[in-house]
Length: 154
Image (cartoon, rainbow, N blue to C red; front, top):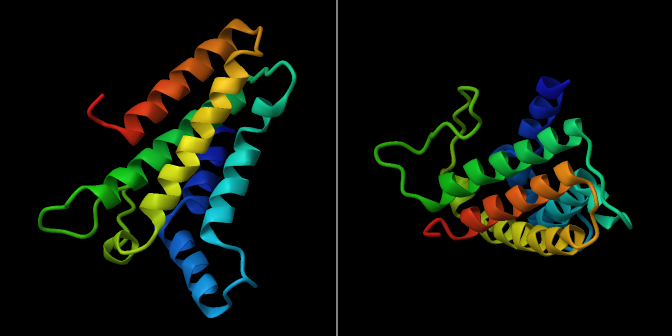
C-alpha cells in the first residue's frame, strides 16, 4: 500500500505535471486549473484530517503525509540549489532524473513554499485540538520538517 501511495505521489508532484499546469495557465488564463490551485487542492486532500474537531491520523496517512513532505523537499532543493555540471538531479529517490532547467524558471519555488507555509499554519491549529499522542507527535514532527524546508539554516 505504501509503495502504491508513494508512486502516485511521485506522479502528482512532478516537474512534468507542474510544467503542464503552467502551460495550461499560459494558454488559457483564468480558464485552466492553476498550478497553485493544484498544489493547494492536493495538499488539502492529503491533510484533510487537520480540519477535524479532534484530528486523528492513522499510520497509513501519516506515512503518506511524510512522503509528501519528502517529495516537496526534494523538489524545492532541486530548484533552489545550483546543480554543478547537470540539470538532471535525481529528485524522485527512484533513479528518475527529469530535466529541471525549465522548472527552475517557473513559479514552482514560490508556489511550493506558499503551500508549505499554509500547511504549517494548519498544523499549528490542529496541534491544539488533537488528543491522540501519535498524531500529536506526527504533527509536531511535520511542522519541524516544514520549518527546515522553508529555512534550511535552522
